[in-house]
Length: 440
Ligand SMILES: CC(=O)N[C@H]1[C@@H](OP(=O)(O)OP(=O)(O)OC[C@H]2O[C@@H](n3ccc(=O)[nH]c3=O)[C@H](O)[C@@H]2O)O[C@H](CO)[C@@H](O)[C@@H]1O
Ligand SMILES: C=C(OP(=O)(O)O)C(=O)O
Image 1 (cartoon, rainbow, N blue to C red):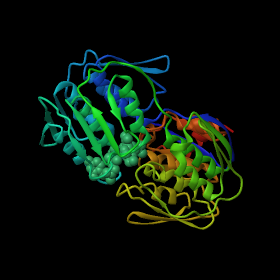
Image 2: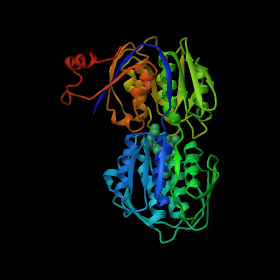
Image 3: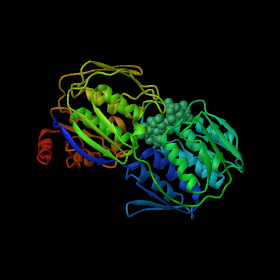
Image 4: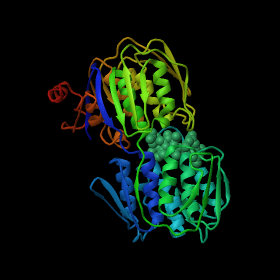
């Protein structure tokens, strides 16, 4: 596994087209199972989690390959309904295959999903929804055995608007006889994208984007060509990078309305943001200042996935900003790493207080999770000197090529594959060897 070398302290300038959305394409790849045919997924980001989805699809007997930049999936010859533990553990979204496999095969066998460690991430709401549609689910020592001779539409009331449970319920409901109404559904744009994909495949669904989603199930679906929406969290990361380092940038191919809470926070901190339908431009000249408390919430609230990168952008701001993480219990694991660069952040439970400092310095850092890793990149751009960021497997789950995108903005970021034996990569001579290759 490689490391990222970031030479901080220079302002940014440039333009980037935002990658396709991880959280959109992953449920869509699970949904291809319902299409029983060929689906062409355009603007599909090349990520570790997408690779994991491809492996799952292939394990189930489907084909999936890259053709001219698109991912072409054919699920006509699917011949399996169980997913091994090692594939399930690769990512959180492996659990979304449950609803799709159950709807297509009437049975499914899999274990609990992996994904970022952000505190407990139960799947009780997923299972409750599937049971309400008629699935019989048994947990045998961590293996879920699911059967449903027939799924029947029902009214499902989610006790909280879980993104994954909403997606699983939609997929299972497509295979159920009759109408399913999902109340208190998550309203994330990625659920609208899933609906759009399924409707192109012939499904009857409406309401995604609101808290009531209605699925008229039992229809035979077919393949389609679909272009995934842009990744609003990757966009938030790039905006935060410019906010941290200063300079100006234009992001293209992104729907600014999906980023309104993030851009509002950056504007409040002193960035100048201009948005058109599919572009967002940002200018940051002067030192940022503290902002009102940032409270994460389900969409359309401030996204928990953008909490770490916004925090990184504010490390050198004037004054103190309070963050309240309301979605996950343990989503401040990046804080200790940021402290290595000189950041002043105090955490108590779900609250973190960022007291802006005058300067940050480069340091040897480890990604703790996907967005925590991205936050280290953002902070490193605002730090004096070189930072080394390791444990990139986390960042690779959700960013196509963060070094490429930051370089497009003029940042000095280089990915090198580790040549030194494990444990020796941080020694001064290994560091010097790598620093020589830093672009200037
Ligand atoms: C692949 C994907 O799309 N991941 C996103 C999805 O994750 P994910 O779908 O896992 O997130 P959920 O919306 O389900 O989780 C929100 C909250 O509900 C709780 N919960 C969830 C399900 C359940 O059965 N029981 C339960 O208690 C979770 O522990 C968490 O506290 O939404 C999160 C919240 O916006 C994002 O951070 C993730 O990037
Ligand atoms: C937490 C995230 O992803 P996942 O739900 O796939 O772990 C994320 O995208 O920030």
